[in-house]
View 1 (cartoon, each protein chain N blue to C red):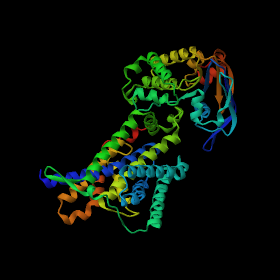
View 2 (cartoon, each protein chain N blue to C red):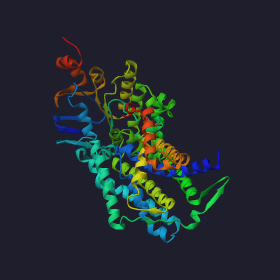
View 3 (cartoon, chains in turn orange, green):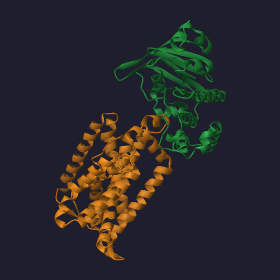
View 4 (cartoon, rainbow over the protein chains, first blue to last red):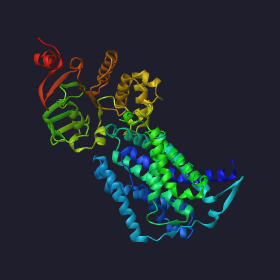
Length: 296
Length: 241
């Protein structure tokens, strides 16, 4: 394999990591409340803007990370408590439209506060240095993105598989009513799903900003949409599927742009959605999704 | 121990319970029988806090004498108070393992040693669950899922167990086992409210029974008396004179 292809694969893994981080929250929220949260990508934007000042002054990174996780988590909890909670039990389409509304509100609040002008979002120069990895090079930012994603996903996996909260979340995802009969506090469980999922999205927003160097109040929309596609490709509601879908999408998008003649690179988003249609034609439940009939 | 008085419950536009009253005394098995749509499941769902009554009271008196009005408590507090509802249709968490289902049953409990003791107790009660503890609950047979559903409820350490149609869709042998277990549990001091289509078997093991008709109690008596009642025989036991 040529160095060029390897390089593209590395880039695809980085982009896939970001998609996976956003997609897992998407799936987590969907699996419990059956809500396709179109405001989820905007949480990534909120995360990036929350750390804009810290990144500009080169604040110590633990502070930046803590800030982004906290802001993201709080943003998720807030929209759940203020908007979505009152719509529980409403027809699915009501919740769906509400998430679009929340998305618009978040974006416009961002524009009101920060204006629509793109802002520079530059990690310290050491993060942008590229290190050689055999025939290819990778920036420290990208290494951080990939390793941080793996660490965060591992933590999340342990949390969902091994802890009491995780059992409550999975039980609630499967059958909300029966979970209540077990004495599982549904409000707290849903809140935890929003907090965790949104924190993941926010940190993806921080890394997205650092990788592409610019942010604006509307930038969360496309990653949010792609993460949605990733979670559908993986099988909506399946956490493993969301991660797999994120990487499949990131890799194929980058390889499409990298391997096709350059005049096609403008079609990358079209390609993503074409891929979605193709996968759903063959596997209507996504790569790892369970069929609807199996669901309680 | 548990007293339901003049309960009115609506589901959507349908007024399902229209002044139902019943009582459970400590240590009893009480059967609640009635036709489809009479309001049996609705009664249980209201006791366990998933449905809110329009009117009426549900009073639970714990051993220490404290009285709770369940209509004012949330589902979580009702489980904590010791009233546990084992739902209709073996609704186990299919994608969770047997062991995880049991952990979910013990969700409200903080006494780790007690939970561990109860775990080995239910594994003794249902050896098949011990064998399959790592298996996905969805892969179990119907009878095994029912056992898991009961075992899961037991892990919450119920003082009152609400059982909704435990025999539904099970092979006769599995039904036999389930009813034996119900009597065994009762022997250990668990008060049981048993909703059953299989009125005959339910009345056989029950101390007392209630017949629910159109959302209200139409008849009550000891299990034996009800089983001998000509109207009950005709309507629910499939017998004609």
